[in-house]
Amino acid sequence: MGVGVRRWHHPVGTVPTTTGGLNHQIEHHLFPSMVRPSLRKVQTMLAEHCAAVSVPCSQTPLIEAHRVGQSRRRHERRSQTL
Image 1: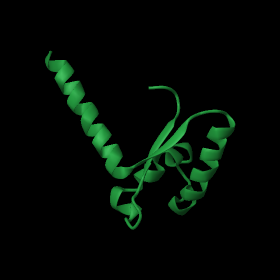
Image 2: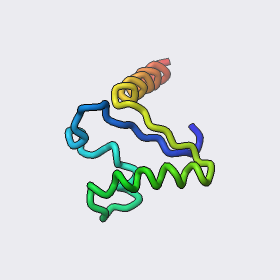
Image 3: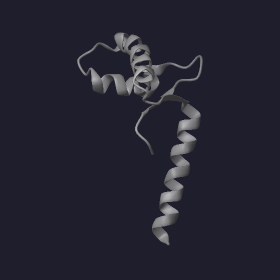
Image 4: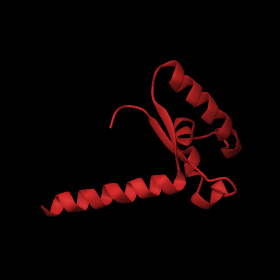
């Protein structure tokens, strides 16, 4: 996987706190002492900065991110048994 920023987002109508704020995990690690309500603003700034310096930044819907993760784990388990 290349260098870049990958994140996932919550489907419309869900509560981000149900997953512990993982939708702002990157921002939290960049600014660990920042209060959670401000992380959403930083998310936009981070995306703009990544575009300015040509670093890929993508968002993946929660369900798709889970599906991709499960698929990778299955593939890893299969390759370990060979």
